[in-house]
Length: 110
Length: 114
Image 1 (cartoon, helix red, strand yellow):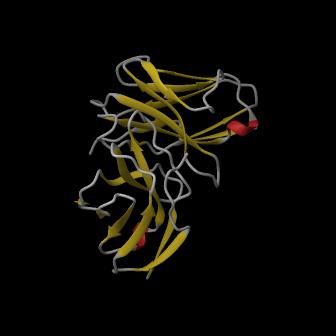
Image 2 (cartoon, helix red, strand yellow):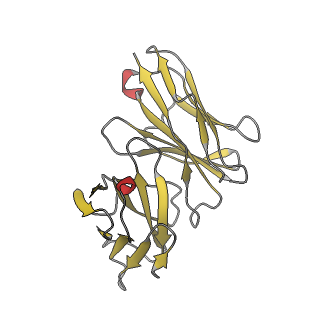
């Protein structure tokens, strides 16, 4: 079962930063926060993950609050190709699986 | 860049027939997974496989399903007697480490059961 809450949808202007929130208030100490996205019906694509520190890679930045109950994925300069469903997933402990929820449908508009 | 591949891209079968979906995970990965996504619904975990045995499975993964790693490169999902409700996109994934590394997903096989 998904342990996260995300907005159903959001729009973003091309070239602007997209900030995607995620609530995971029941996260435990050994659980990681993962972000994936799915473009149309393609296989999910890994974006970034973190435990408690903020993380940045070539795709995005992940900001995790100090109490770890929420996080924000930041796409610094959204392009039309970033239009996708974005999934925030909490995983850890003895989990092998990724539990996908409904995610946030992000539409980047020109 | 290494990638997970899946064949076929689309499989059409009659209800009651057996199907085998094939995946070639990334070569040095140790953990393998199958997920499915019914049209318009969320991605659902089916099974994970490590060290030649199932490490975790969902309620969906009943006796009609089986997985195998027949050689050093392929990872297969078999559905023994397909039902209409098995129609879905099936995604294979692999990872190097269970928790710390990301799972890399293949492009999927669309299974249509008639």
